[in-house]
Every structure is written in C-alpha cells, then in structure tokens.
Length: 289
Length: 252
Image (cartoon, rainbow over all chains, first blue to last red; front, side, top):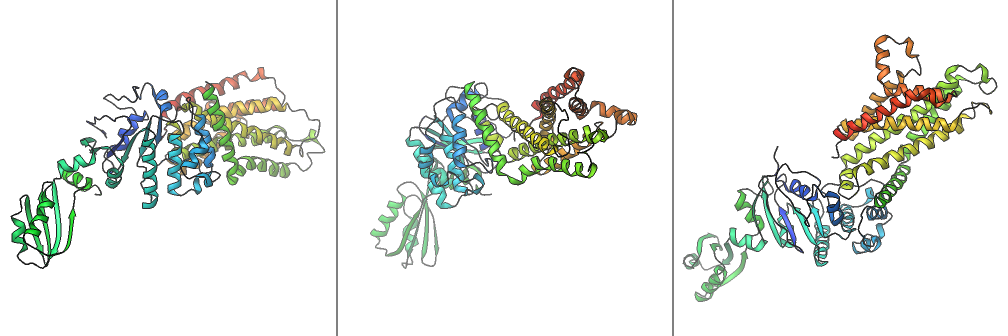
C-alpha cells in the first residue's frame, strides 16, 4: 500500500517547519523516511546534504529525533536515559544535567520512566532529541495526549530550540499548534502535499473571507450593511447581525458604515479564518473527522 | 568503534540494572531453576550425601544438566519477552533512531542473558553442594563454558521466536511451547535410541539434543574433543538462526 505519494518540500535552516494533516495522512511515514528509519520505494531525500538511506549513521549523529508513541524501558531512570543517549553519539554531546535543568526535569532525575507524567515523558524525549546538539530536530506529534498546560510549556521549549539556531521539523494534527509554532507549514492529506506556505499566507490565500458579528437594535441596519463593498451575505437573527464578506478592508468598511449611519451597537467582534478553515476548504472535510 | 563499545557497555549495564529492578522477573529467571533443582534433589535423593556411589545416573548427571538447561531456557524466554515488549513499546525503534547499530542493541541483550545464565549457574552449583559430597570432581569451569555455548545457540532461536510472536502477551507462552518440548525430546529423560523412529529423527534436528549431549558429557568429565560434533551442531544452529532472524526480525 502506498502511504505517501507526491510529497515534495524543502525545510530551511533555522525555521520551524510543520507537516500538518489528519491522522493517517502520511505525516509519520514522510518523517520517518527523512530520518532514515524507513526506506522509500521511490524519490530522493537529502538532509544536511546526506542521503538518509546510505548515510543513515552519519545523519543520525547530527539529528535529534522524537518519535510518536515511543516509550523507554519502564524502569530506566531519567538520568540513566540521558546518560545512555549521551554515550551513543560520535560527536560531542551537551551536558545532560544542564539539559534536565532546562527542561525542568531535575527533581525527576531519579524517577523511573514509567512513573513520569505524559508531559514529563515528552520533555525527557525532547532532552534525548537534543543531547547530541543536533542541527535538525524532528518532533512527531509532540503534544498529542497532553493537557493544555503541558502543551503550552512544550511549545515554549520548541521555540527555545529554534532560538538556539536549530531547524525544527514537526508533524501535528493540531491546527492551533501549527499556527502558534510554525514558520511554514505543509498541508498533507492522503499522502499528498496540498499546499506549503507560512500559516498567515495560507489563510489569506485560501480563506479571504471575513466575518463581523455585531448586535444592534436598529432594525433596518441590514439594509445599510448589504451595500458595504465586499459584503456577500448578511444574516439577521433578533438583534444580532452576521456580516460575511471578503477583503482586508471589510472590517474597516463595516466600522465606517456604522459611524456614518450612527448605528448604535452593543456588541462587535470579528471572526478571522484560521488554518482549520484552510484545511476544511482545501480538503472538504474537518481535520477532526 | 570506541563509540560503539561505549554504547554497548552503557546499554548492557543499564539493562542489567533494569532487570534487577523487576523483582518478579529476576526471581522467575534466577530463582526458578535453582528451586526446581533443590526440590527435585531433595525428593529424589535423601541419602545422596552419604552414598554418592549408589546415586542413580539421573541424579548424578541428568538433574544438574536439566537444571542448567532450565536456566538457559528461562534466559531465552526472558529475552523473547523483553524483545517483544521493547518492540511493542517502540523502545527498539527509538534506539534505532540513534547512531547505535541494531546489532549492538541485540548484542547487549545477549550479554545480559549470558551473564544471567552464568550467575544462576554459580548459584545452582553452590546450592548443589548440599547434594554432592565434597570431592566429587566436576569440571565446573568447562561445564559453565558448555552451558554458555548452549545458551548462546538457544538465544539465537529466541531471536527467531521474538520475530514471529505477534504481541508481547504471547511471547512467553509461544516461547515455552517451542522450547520445553525440545527438552523432553533431548535425550535427557529417555535415551534417544529408545524413542520411536519418527521422534528420534525429530530429536536429531533439535538443537537442545546437542546441548544435552554436550552438557552431560562435560559434566561427566569427557574431553571437549569428544563433543566437537555437538559444539559444531550448536554453532550451525546459531548461524542458521542468526541469518534467519536478520531476515525476519521486526523492529516495530
């Protein structure tokens, strides 16, 4: 069975690049090919100038990897895992104790892996991925299954990795994660890449719609709203109006219309499309399906 | 090279520590064969200590060989279980995503199991002193070597078994179903010659048959030269199984 087909992209040095798509889209397969853990049937891959298939050990010496759903030995201690990993690399490794400190794992250094929380486990996996001071870090579904608080803490850590000048290649099915973390994203579905760009550009390109929701007691307000340039639809329910249209100027135009006609509003908010909407638009289905 | 040795040593040492942290596993693997030996020895020979000459052949040679084989088999079963748990948990895959060579990962486990076998054997021999009068000449060192060679060979079968078991839950039972009948047919309980022809032919191709022949011989004081054939057979098993498992071994 072919899991991935027509996947082509470049990751730039020093950026956080995200491969986003629903479960089963081919994210992990793609990433594992790039890491040298899986051999593609066709195509070519180059990472740091190396071929992941032929130079796999050279490559693995220079990259850091966090795998989806990986575990460690149940009864391995945190410090032992870091110490073991430090012994596996040819190149100079970073100070394991400092790494544990930076990742907030110092109090847990003598704990068994099986007794760590989900967030602590992921932080340990980040530590293991950083132990060899890698040039590229691969993170596969890093925050899946974590509570929102741990997720935010992990996001800060990933930004910290970029600040150290490293390149991060991650996969996620969480659009919010991609939006907040990634400099550029590639949307993948059914093993194909649909589009690649920075999140804002993707939203702008595929979802130029803007929506303004406001509340007013002026009953004939809808008449005024319909003539605003760019407005495509006005929905009125009781005193709430939903104005849909496109173009960056839509919100300004609505405000302008309100003041010109002296319409008094009791509520006003805008709804901007996000990556989730882009995904829905490009694939015709929600990422959660 | 030095990096590989460093990685191998660290991994081996950590695996030993992890093994000892699992009390039930440590007891099952080390304690069980010793227990079998002690209980059986007590039932079968209350007078052993005073009259060694009257001891039956089984007590004199068969029982220590059986107990040693149990050590070996339980080491192999523990290897099969650990490998399948590690595979299921993605631990093997995570280790493979480092510059560590796959062979190094497996070698570490083989070393741990061989050390375990040697330690259990030492324990067994100490326990056995109760049943063997001081002065009985058994070439302990040669016997330990023979057991390690046998275990090495059976461990390679373990890797093949570890490749075919679907999940960790089945590892122990499937391994036991494959390995324990081999002991029954090994010539330890019933001489090979008195087996029906079909079973005899089966026994000839089972690796444990050669392990038993080697262990019995060395325990009784035979020279290594007399068992070159057994060692060669065990080496062939090792080579065949290793070659087979490099083909069929699954990392995830």
